[in-house]
Length: 253
Image (tube, rainbow, N blue to C red):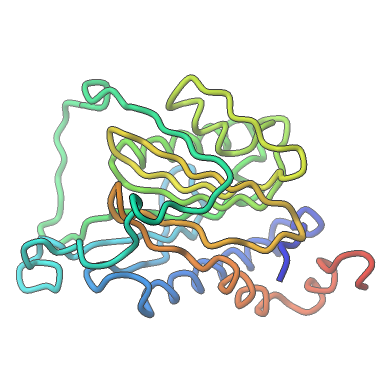
């Protein structure tokens, strides 16, 4: 199913779809796409991200769990070196290790699982004001600085606050680089591999395109492909018919 133009409906309709899509992606990952030592959850995240964010967590390091064996976490996923994601653009930034160090005290629950990756679907509200966009960008950089990999799906066009799209807004906070979206592909899918060598895999798309699979990194050199197209279709089935009709191409009504 081609991507719909979500600017044609209100934010509440997209929020309903957004919630369904996160659930479908989480279910697909937990149904066998992830190696057994990982699991995905739809969570509430404070800060700039929306209310429904998918987090990827690892049970490595917990005694008696599947990921506790030596070398756990290496047996699944796709190796970046042998199967690089098929995207239109890539970017790499070397991060100064000393600039990333911070002094502080961190208190962790002894039984908490480690968050290794996050997936965020951008909502209109994330780009509605300068403050909202700044909060989103700062949260994304904060996540990457914590060595948490990130996949962002933005099905909305650039606006006055992000004239080259959400990736350009984020990447300009990481490195002096002026990314430009192609004029015929103004929606952005971007996967970030965290770490001292930060990599971005960018696939611009347009309404009427078919969504490609995108990588969600488990480690800097290993990822799982997220089935965006299949899960998008399943989530769209849960949109009320009245609004499905509104999102149909003009000629198809």
